[in-house]
Length: 259
Image 1 (cartoon, rainbow, N blue to C red):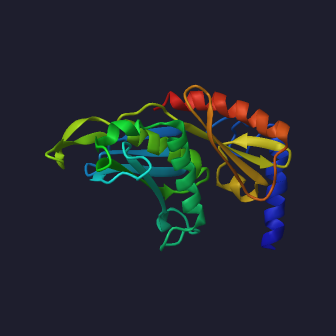
Image 2: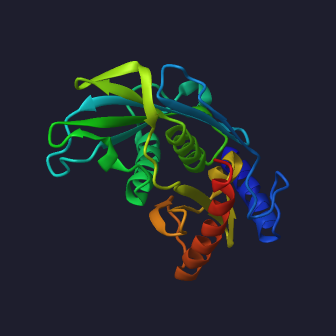
Image 3: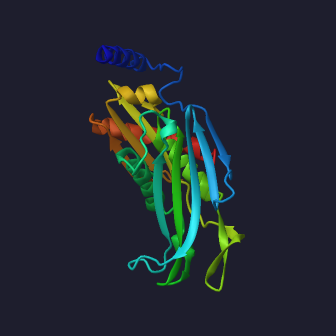
């Protein structure tokens, strides 16, 4: 019976999308309402909570002094993690990070890293010895679809508002700030769901449950692609990918204005 209900729901959602409509009243290129709240956590160097429709994601920035990688002796280090809090959805489980959380962290991290979002050379204190290590933590508080875009918006907003601890005699003084984190770009991800022959941006939970394929595109301020991630078992034609990229670049311009 559950399988029959799922098929009926998918057919209905698919039919609506092919007519350019959605269950929640949006068009195929419309995002749900977005709200960004900044600097909510005093213990973090920077933080933000993003509400994307019914999805809510918090991101926090912490910084410590440590050793650089041997092949990048004059650059700071970024490490990104994601936690799917069980209270956010009955499908989330406590324990070590599972594949969905790892995928979210990797997609966000890749977009930030490949865009050159953070000027990591300015995070160097002593070349080969001491640099700032930036920890970017993602916490999913409520899940109603499209965690990729909500997480990216939360992370970029938290990084833009982060304040670096003061350094004296090679030690970090966390009670004092020395300025903003050196930011060079604002990468934005846009996620599309393919359901039948229709491709819609910002899939909410019910659309995610019946989608055939997913494509996330992260672009820089110049409109250059810095990361892409295809998910689920279905596929996109070459023409669909190119068209979706063009749509994603334009939507990213709109989202970037919210930061």
